[in-house]
Amino acid sequence: MKQHIFLASPHMSEEGYEQGYVKEAFDTNWIAPLGRNVTEFEKEMAMELGGGKTVALSSGTAAIHMALKLAGVGEGDLVFCQSLTFSASANPIVYEKAEPVFIDSEPDTWNMSPKALRMAFDKYGKMGRMPRAVIVVHLYGICAKIKEIKEICDTYRVPLIEDAAESLGTVCGNQHTGTFGDYGIISFNGNKIITSSGGGMLVVNTKDADKKAAKALFWATQAREPAPWYQHTEVGYNYRMSNIVAGIGRGQLKVLKKRVEKKRCIFEYYQRHLGALPGVSFMPMPEDSYCNCWLSVIQLAEDCPVKPMGIMQALEEDDVESRPVWKPMHLQPVFAECDFISQVEDLRILYQDTGADSSISGQIFARGLCLPSDSKMTEEDLQRVCKVIKGCFGC
Ligand SMILES: *Cc1c(COP(=O)(O)O)cnc(C)c1O
Image 1 (cartoon, rainbow, N blue to C red):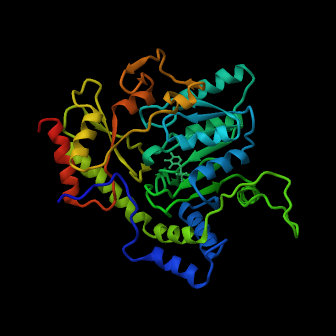
Image 2: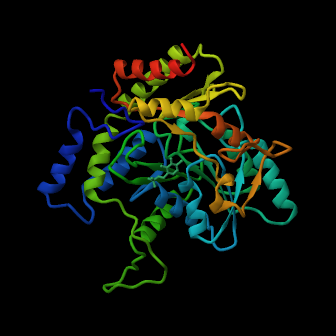
């Protein structure tokens, strides 16, 4: 019987590092609340990134929430956020009763368009409304035009939050994603490049990083004031990572490089074996960057008779998991009231089935497909996937 092929699933180290750290926590009874794994995981992650002050939290979403609060986002504030992303990038804006304005992507990186970002600053600047923060994403591990975006944010003195949930291990120039923005966030959710079974990390890169990180830690641990009794002057959250979870994270960090190498091999394999199919292209690999290739994503030309959903169905019939590209936030009913800024002039619905429009992000969504990119995949698995896809093209 054929084995199920996952899109991306947890891949613990062959050496059993994770169990070693978890066992240490058991042996010392540091199951909770804190313990050595949490603080060591923070240190090791900061080392890996080569900078930043790290705070281990219960999820990447919690880390975005804390970053927004550190940026001073509150009720009625504007936040400019990349539209092409997972909803977790944008939801915390709403937790704070702020207003998201979604920004379109650009073809070179699939991530936030600096041009559209400038347009947004122009438009809202004229109304006397500066955003309180900007959220950029390195989708699928692809480096955004991060230096240009940081420059724009610096010009307007608006804090930049870098959603590096999917891009741990990606390097732009010679710097890790997550360390460019004033704040970076990483996720260790089950399908990410490494997983702690669920968790996240806030990376603070501001000049007053120690102070800011301490504040995030304070909010994340129920905002307890230093007093013998439980004293609170602010609303707190229960967002701290547990010592068991951190133990898994520490073990996984040891194999991050190996996972990135494997993911890159998977991407290269698809390029080699599917690159000649008519109308098939691949996610961009921006120059001067090293991509973690968290997921391998293909694009089908607008006039390609084969559609992403057709491939997805054919793969499913062979017990292989694939997934559409993230549906942009500006096309989501939950954010229907929010503004969307695009450099595409005549926005119109191009695809009736998905409701995708002619924006750059809309087209990437409508024509893209995430191929199985599980780091446990064998050469036979990759052959099997490619055979099914080629079959869709009649080859
Ligand atoms: C996974 C993900 C998140 C959220 O991380 P969690 O740890 O699942 O809360 C945020 N943004 C992006 C782009 C993601 O892919």
